[in-house]
Every structure is written in structure tokens, then in C-alpha cells.
Length: 365
Image 1 (tube, rainbow, N blue to C red):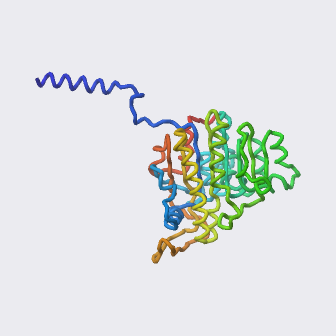
Image 2 (image 1 turned 90 degrees about the vertical axis):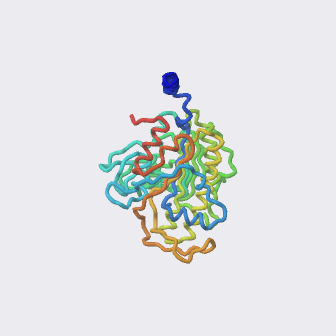
């Protein structure tokens, strides 16, 4: 009997080891689409303040995978948005102030540019000028981040399908006299100013690329002057899903969480955090229905050395700041959808680029 039991056990183990990979339910599915959402300046305390200051849970709390990235720049433990976003966009550590170039000032292709060349639909949405450091790092290549007019000109070098944000002045009221909006129209874009044509009321035709922008900067959410981020985020994933037969890559930035940190204004941080979280909720709703979309939420750095102190209640947070600049804190990374498992653990900020490229099956030329 013992011999018979041993023989049966060996046969069973052999059969189990010969199962085909397709029968293994633990093999993660690859995503067709990626949405990278960047809460500029959003550290753990910014998230905590947003969480504690409202009764309902944040949409961010639904994410099953959480990791941490090391945000430092090539030349400084405390990064800026340019170096931080270039790490995500291009996969290289670079110096503070660099946009889409490496430490030696050489241009580096971004995931958006690589995706575009592979026939994947692409888009960006931002609550700052679309030429600011974070969005610019995905499409521009400049030695210094504040070259807004030069950044705007580089939008003609790619076939990005959708971009929404501030920056109209950098496209139209330029020192060189070039009207980039006219050039975009010649390329087939629908181009509009947000305040002249309300994007919230527009039904986007997926057969045509879209560009929407306001003047050089955006108003803050708390003033009621800006309300587009949640709605446009929902519109953008639907638009790119219809436009991108081979999938899509979309970057969405909640820019002004950072500005609240620089201003050392807790209420500013919290209202921008809530606005960004509504956008997260809309994207997450799409991803749950779609089943093929990887959603990643992170930040380039923390801003303000923001703290919630003793005496705080859910109705009244007692907060303080250590700086009006950025800090070197580890930054949380949240992931949902196929391929999300890769974003757990602690890793360099450049690894986010590598993980996204791997998820979409992309490689540099």
C-alpha cells in the first residue's frame, strides 16, 4: 500500500507540474491602457488631510496596491517637479529644472512619445499651464523648465490626441509671432479656449484630436473658477478609449496641491486634494468597467513639510509647515487594475517609467 500511495503521489505531482500557463489564474493580465495620475506636491499628510476633512472615504482608499518611491533628483535629495516628472516620463534621474533631458542635457524620449509612435493614443490633462514642468516633461526637451514658449512649440513635434490645461498665452501671444493654435488647426486639431467654449458641454468627436487651454495659469478650485478636472478626466478616458484601437496612455495632473503647499495654506491643499480625488474616482469607475486599464496615482514630491498636529479633529485640523518648498519624503504610489502588482514595494521614481513600459510592452528604439 505504501508503494502504491507513493506512486499515486508522484503521478499527481507530475501532472500538476505539467499544467499549461493558461491554467494558472495567478498570472497577471497585461493592461491595454494606462492612466498615470500625478498629485503634484501630494505626500502622505496631504492625503491624510483630505481624508480626515470629509466624512466619506477618499476614492484613493479603494486602491488595493500601495508602494513607495524615492523621489530624489540626480543632483539633489530634494527634487523639483521637472526632475521628478522626467523620472516618470523618461525613466532617468536628472538635475532639478530639467525637462525631458538627462543629467548631461541630452533629450530622452518619454513614454508618451514612445506610445504615440507605436500607434497608442495619448493625452494629458493638467490644472496648471500645460507647459509647466510636469506635463512638459512628457512631451518637451528643455535644459530649463521655465522655457514655456519653447515648451509650447514642441507640442507640434508629436501627435498627442488630447491636451487640456492652462497656457493659451504661450501658444498664441508669443515673442516669435508664431501662432501655435493655428498650426495645430492645420494638423487637424479642434482647438479652443476653455472660457470661450465650455469643454464640459462638448461631445468630443473621436475622429479628431483636441486641444483646450485657458490663459497662462489656472484659477484655484476653491474659488469656483475651475471645475473641469473631474469631468474632463472622465471625458478623456472615454475619448481616448474610442480613439485608441491599440490602447491609450493618459497623464492627469492635479497641479495645485503643490501650490497650496508652497503657500503654506492648509485649506488650499485640502480643496485641491478633494478635486483631484474626484478625478481619481471618475477614472477608477472607468477602469472597473473596462477591465483593461491600469491606474497609477502618485506624486513627484511632497511640498511644505506639511504636518497634522495635536488638537486636530475631523472638523478642525491643526496644521503646520516646515518649509515653503519641497521635501525629500518617500512618496506613496497607488495602483489598480491589470499589472498593478508591480507597483508594490519601495523603488526609485524612475522605476515607475520602467513598470509602465513593461506593462504596455513598449521598448525604446
